[in-house]
Length: 98
Image 1 (cartoon, rainbow, N blue to C red):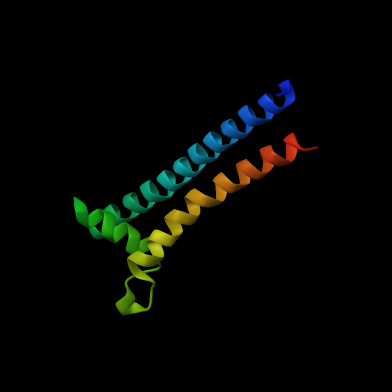
Image 2 (cartoon, rainbow, N blue to C red):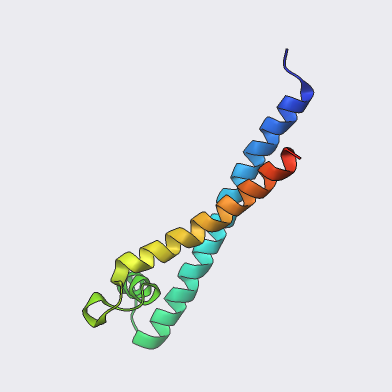
């Protein structure tokens, strides 16, 4: 038989997952916006080139000058999304199983 406690834990786990995704999305968006503002302000670029310039800046500069380029920028944005999501999920899981 399904107990009420099990249902509550399942619902809380789902909510933790949603909160983790929202936290990750918000932090990745924040990193990307800050990078876009920086890229637009420094380079004076507009349109699609803002995205490539932002990713290159977040990656430490172009590969030609020793940075990681767009690949490094993608890694930064991915980490900015993943880390808060994992932290929120782990904290909720720990509190559920105390």
